[in-house]
Length: 267
Image (tube, rainbow, N blue to C red; front, side, top):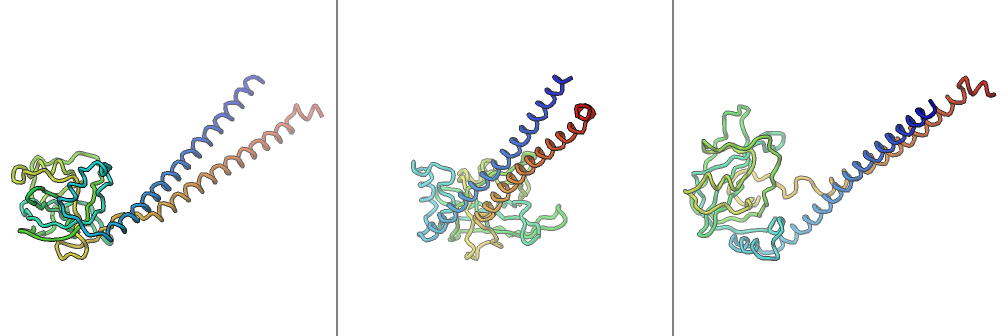
């Protein structure tokens, strides 16, 4: 019996220690992840400020930069200001779904602009959607040549429960996510140049397009740092809680053993 009790005690101790370490490590990992995200956002905010103080580049210069050896990272051309002179193609309008503005659900309107050497997707802004999902917003496609300014945005792919089916597209086309390779295939051969691997967001000062409610960073660095502190605080609270429970359990066991019949007989 004593051997079985000893094994049981060792098992309980190992279980307590393992659970404490695993949960504590996970909380600390989340804290560091949020801190690193905050640091990245902080550095990006500094970079955006510096870039906005520079003269905007042309689209051709942006493309050249993206191909240079010193600009091989994913974030290399992100947030660069750009000037574009190009022809809007009104045949293809993409409506990016599930875009919220002041608690109202709507769409971002995207069109293709062609230059003599490139084709690029342009984010023209937000329009409100209908409660009836079968009704798409009434959008008038832009036509002809326009000069405007914008910023480069690298497309960040989100999680999708199912692949988008574009086998029978109806225009304007409602999409759940920007997939530039699939979009290029849809508009070919009318537009024979593949879309560049980024999107241009029209500047808020431009009269072109719709409501421009975007921000380069949805969550600022301060929020990430706040979440980092919260996770660290939870990790500390968890550790203190488990130590207190352990001490309390040990004290209870010790008192129980002292009050057991065998202990009373020995007295």
